[in-house]
Image 1 (cartoon, one colour):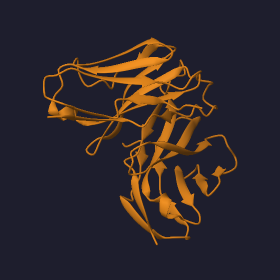
Image 2 (image 1 turned 135 degrees about the vertical axis):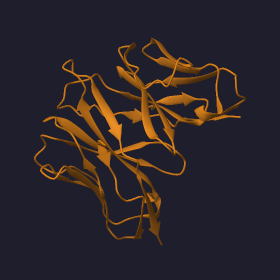
Image 3 (image 1 turned 90 degrees about the vertical axis):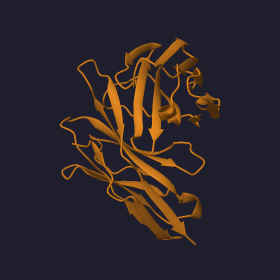
Length: 118
Length: 118
């Protein structure tokens, strides 16, 4: 079975440019998460979608960041304009439908996108 | 207060020996889930093992076991018979309910870097 697929794997861009990161969740998974990983702050949740609807975007740093999930098999995270401090590894993860507090609801991660903003 | 505490920035273990990676957590919820993930140098996040707060037995997955001590709020990962391929960052994580609607958020620790010595 294909896991979570992210593209691109690496992105190098210049400050001020628009960056779009893409994610295809595992088929049948209803929940999708975008995380950012940096040395200073560790792994942070940016946004959580359930059934394509954003449920929690409290982790989105600022208006320069936006995320969409137009359908169950695709999501994007966009940064416009990008800044050097956005340099990080961005992960997408998906999990099955939330089955309640006693269910595992394991999040499976993609390989990540390493973003460098010069 | 930090939700997840991993106090060991780095650990060394001799090949074929067992190693314990520490994790303590903080929650007032009665129902929650605990996870361990592995991140090798290639960067992907790999799910290893899950423990539910209501599970009476410690979780085991092959060479991985989770030493769950609920009263002490600890969820240590035990890796038996260490292999060179176990060298990686290891992250402890906790899922707890964020609101009465059942949205469950996962918080990650800062990780422990394990190096297996031949």
